[in-house]
Image (cartoon, rainbow, N blue to C red; front, side):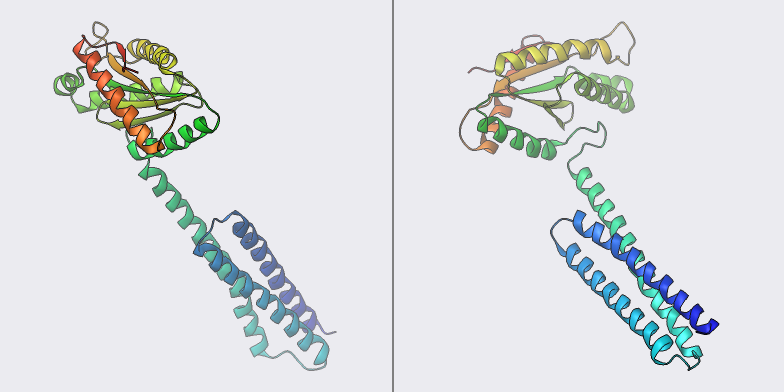
Length: 277
């Protein structure tokens, strides 16, 4: 076997290993991919790589075994460049698909996340709450809803600016993250209103949670005016119905907790009120 044959085989082997590596990456992405057109594209890329490996093996056998005595012409060497481009292009396509998936996942998270506080927005909260309530019903457990509203928040915005108001909202979100249980669902419904679903707790248990959160919020969220003032919050609590449509039950509990919240506001603010059973 001549030196040219050896160099040709080495080049073919390198391209073949590149195809195998691209196949490993494509298979890993195929296994991790969800349903949809992405899997169809990955199958097509895998088919291209398999065909490329077959053609590489045939070309190596034809040029070094069948036509062993014939010199390898310049066209054959140029064909190697095209063969090497196949796995490289497949790897580039896989990288583009990974970037696209990351962007789509980011957009999906943004669609259900409040950008200021990082909590779920109303859509994200409702979706997560429906899942949690369905699980509670399968396990025959209660669930209760808490709705918080920051007291005199408009005065903070008007008197100290929207940046100060945003800091108060972010502070409230931090309190909720730190003091809620791992299984509790929390979200910002809009404005200065927050909701918490407490799976496994009845109205009395959720009211105790709301009191703890209200006290923590007074201590941990500074008022823009300084230590002489306190940021307070009012809360309404309602227990979810144990039967019926989950989405309807959630909306009914939110409405009942909201009414209890306004009763807390009317009674002087900075307190927790339970909705009637």
